[in-house]
Length: 361
Length: 177
Image (cartoon, rainbow over all chains, first blue to last red; front, side, top):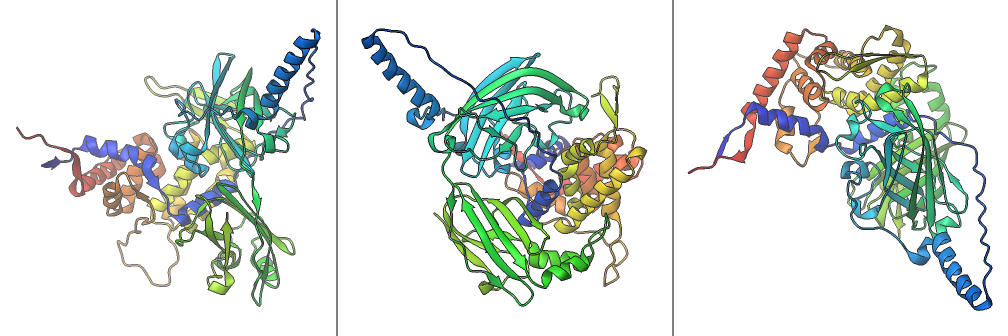
C-alpha cells in the first residue's frame, strides 16, 4: 500500500525535475532562437605550420623491403583510419550524459568513445567522445572530471567548473577546424571534416593552450599545454534534389540547397517578393521591441519548421533569415534517421500545396 | 574589469563582477537564459512571449548593468520576473484574482505526476518552487527575485510544497509485516 508523501520526498523530486523536463516544440524553438542570438564569437588561431615528417631508412635490401611494407601499412593506418578502422566503440566510462548528447541530436550509440587525457598546470583534460559526419564534427571534453554529467545547465556557475579557452583542432593532413554552431565551453561543434580526412578518416589533434575558470567569467584563465587525440570516421553528407519553389502572391520561396547526413539536415532557400517590403516597414529600429504585427509577419512567412512523417517537429539546431533582397534563409535540424520529412517555411504556409516533402536516404 | 570574491562562512563563495565587456555579459547571459525562459513559462507566458521577455531582459540588463550588485543570476532573473509579471493588454478585461495558466507543453516522462501537480499551483508558488529547487537558489535570492521579504518567500515555498503534498502520492511502498 502507498503511504502519504513526505516533504523530503517532494523536495527530492523537485530537485530532479529540471533534469527530466522535456520542452515542447514551441519551447525548443524559442530556446534555440534565444541561444542562437547569443553565440560568442568563435576563437580561431592562425593556420598552423604543416607538420613535416621524414623517415630515414638505411637497411639492407631485404630489410628495406620489409620496413617499406611495414611503413606503408603504418602510414596507411595513420593517414587513413578507415584502413584500420581503429574505433574505440566500447562504452566509455564517464562519457557525456544523454542530456548533453541530446542537445546535439545524438545518442550514446552514435558517438565514438575516445577517453584520451592530458594533464598540465595541475588540470586534467579528457577528450571523452566525439562524433563526425559530413555536416559537422562534435567533441566532448571534461576538465578535472567535470562538465559532461550532472546538471549541464548549472555547469560553469560553481568553483571548479572549467571550460576550454584557446585551442586548435587539426587533422593528420594539417587542416584546421574551427568552432561552428551552438555548443558550450566543453561540448564543441566544429566545421565538418575536410577532404581527404573526410574520405579516409581523421586523426584529430586538439591542442589546448588555456582553460577558463567559468565561474569567474573571464577573470580566471589558466595557461597550459594539453594535447588530446581522437580518431573519427565521418559518414558522408548527401546533396538532395531540390523541391519546387513555393509561390504566393506576396512571396516566392526558392530552395537553393538541401544537404543531409545520418543525423543532420540543412536546408537553404531564398525569399523574394513584396513580403520583404512589408517586413522592412514593420522591422523595429534600434533596440525597440518587435511590434505585434511584425511578429505575426515573421511567424507567418519567415519561421521555418521541419516535420517527420508523423507530423512531429524535429529537433531544431539553429536557423536564421538574412533580410537582403532577396532574403536568404537557413535551417539546421537534427533528424532521427532516413525517411520522409516535410518542410514548412512559415506558420502561414500550412496548405498542403505550400509545403514540400523531401526524402532523406 | 573587477572581480570580487566575498565568501560567507560555510557557504559557496559569491563572485561579484563589474564589467563593460559585452562578451562577458553575453557569456553570463547564456548561462542563465534557459532558466530565465523557463521562469517566464512557469509564470504563465507563452513560448513566444517568454522568448521576447528574456531578450528584452538582456537588453535592459546590459543597459543598466552598472546598477547590479551581487551575483548575475538572481539579478537577471529578477528582471525576467518583473517583466513576466507585467500586465499584458487584453481584449477582454480579466477578472480580479485571475492567475496565468501553467505551461502545458513542458512535461517529464520520469515524473509526470509532479509536473501535473505543479500546473495546479498558483503561478507565484510555481515560480518560487522552481527557483528554490530547480535553480538551486537560496531563499534570500528567491525573495530578491520575486520582490518580497524572505519570510514571504518561505511562506510561498511552504504553501507550494503543501499544495504538492495534497496532490502527490509517495513513490515508495509501505512494507507491511
